[in-house]
Amino acid sequence: MDGSRLRLTGVGEGFTTRITTTLTGVDSPTKVLEALQRLFPETSRPDLEPEPSLGHPVNAEWEFDEVSLATFLQQLHEQRILDTALDAMSMNMDGNTTTFRVARQAAVAGKIAFPIPGDDPLGGAFSITITGEGLEDWLQAATWHAGRTQVPRHINDDHSMSEDGESTTWV
Image 1 (cartoon, rainbow, N blue to C red):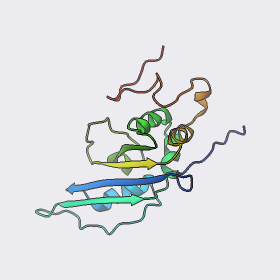
Image 2 (image 1 turned 60 degrees about the vertical axis):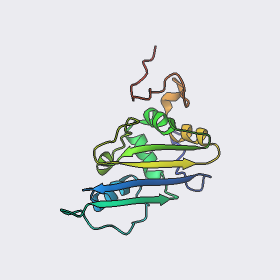
Image 3 (image 1 turned 90 degrees about the horizontal axis):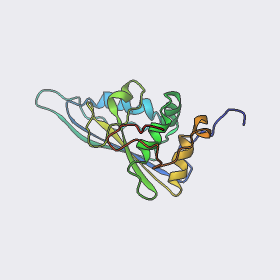
């Protein structure tokens, strides 16, 4: 192997990807869109609601379909959070569908943070749903790194983080 890795995007690979987010209260549509496009730059621009003002809160539901995961997956590799990503992205997997969340506030800085299940992060979250045949294998390939040759990982293995976000101690 020449050191390069397979570059997956989720597009044209037999998967559908949907991103949703809810804007309420003082959420700035402009800033939420900027955060979204930091991790998913190919996302189409929605008709933006007016910025919130006193007595006029924002209340909107955004949905984006067939979103490329190329930049998002690249950031997982650059930020070296691939094992965490595998755990977080597969925690709610049901057959050929998984849904996970990414904190919007971290996305503003181009970072990826997976909120602990049940927590609502300050600034809200993007909910990402991926569906397709062979999803488990795809997630493992999309988050693969060389360290797995020495410490193999797979979905729901003994090294997975717990549901409260705590890491598992390796013996």
